[in-house]
Amino acid sequence: NAGVTQTPKFQVLKTGQSMTLQCAQDMNHNSMYWYRQDPGMGLRLIYYSASEGTTDKGEVPNGYNVSRLNKREFSLRLESAAPSQTSVYFCASQTADNSPLHFGNGTRLTVT
Amino acid sequence: GQQVMQIPQYQHVQEGEDFTTYCNSSTTLSNIQWYKQRPGGHPVFLIQLVKSGEVKKQKRLTFQFGEAKKNSSLHITATQTTDVGTYFCAGPSTDSWGKFQFGAGTQVVVTP
Image (cartoon, rainbow over all chains, first blue to last red; front, top):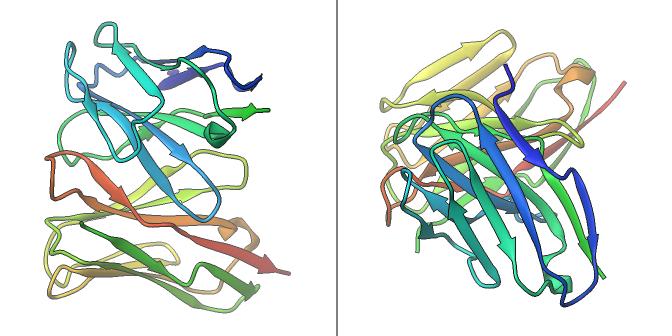
């Protein structure tokens, strides 16, 4: 009964380093999302994937890339981390359009 | 572009008191969802409203969707310490089916 699993939970990067945030869901959901959460700004959509093999930009895609590896997995990559990318990142999945979002526990990323 | 706004941003409540938080959209919504995020946690789906004027209750929580489907409210009766957290509303994005636009949230602090 895992739901949406994100790894790692915490990460500290230096400016310019790269890393990939992993997300996997075991609910056979079609849609998957990456959000970032910053104080006072709610949840902002970075990228989403409506189905396996498709990805689309959200509200704040600059500096990020994504891969929908298969139906279960949706990864987020930071090629050259910047301090402005310090945030909490949440992955979410959804069974169908307008159905509730199921969130992972989040990754707290600090870029120094 | 579409905006989803929540007021107030912060709500300090004495235990036992009632309070209401409001969500306003710049566009008419087909539905609205509410989520709760406990401190240090991830957003958890609470409820979805679809019909104009719809009212739904979950124990001490009452959710309402406005007649014009551009606003919603969450009223909590007899606030308890377990109500602490941030409450988000989310409405479907007008530029892409299935995506949600989140409000910035109302952070609720309960004083015993």
